[in-house]
Length: 256
Image (cartoon, rainbow, N blue to C red; front, side):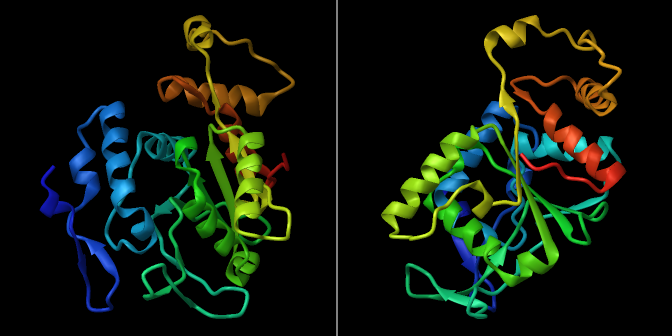
């Protein structure tokens, strides 16, 4: 990939925008190559992802989430920018380069319907290796905003264990001299864990042969959807599918 094609340009408002469409570069790559490509992109543009205009980042994880939404016939939009303000009411902040920038959060998916208690549901699939200080900065700022409190309900999907994320947040708070205790509730309203399956799980699982539990119809439906989409592969996403089914049918999101 030529370096000049990865150089950012600036639009009339002064915000950095990339001069290429990432999705066109990765569309025909296999999952491993695609994610490796995105690693490079994230390392170069991580601080500008939320203000990146036409850039669409579609990892294999995000593509899987979109396929689940389509299978459940849940209408959604992607990369929809949300302008918000901080606790003081300011809509801008000064970045590490001394530049004034707007508070913008761009969730991977906004659900057109269903909502949750009158709020728009937004989905944030996030691979475990991308949890870092910049991500925590972004999510905590948005979760603390009045726009989040009044309008949005954020569901994060990750394979990273909650205990590990909480430990990272505790260390983040210590290093940033933040007095309040931080845990996953400070970066999302609900976290759904897509458990990484062991090699033994991968060998033993036969698509369509999992036991059916008549007492758990939503779990059976989640299994059916997962199998329909080619199986769970490395991540068990049935809990996430079941969460969406419950939300769609009953306007309910269970707390962890």
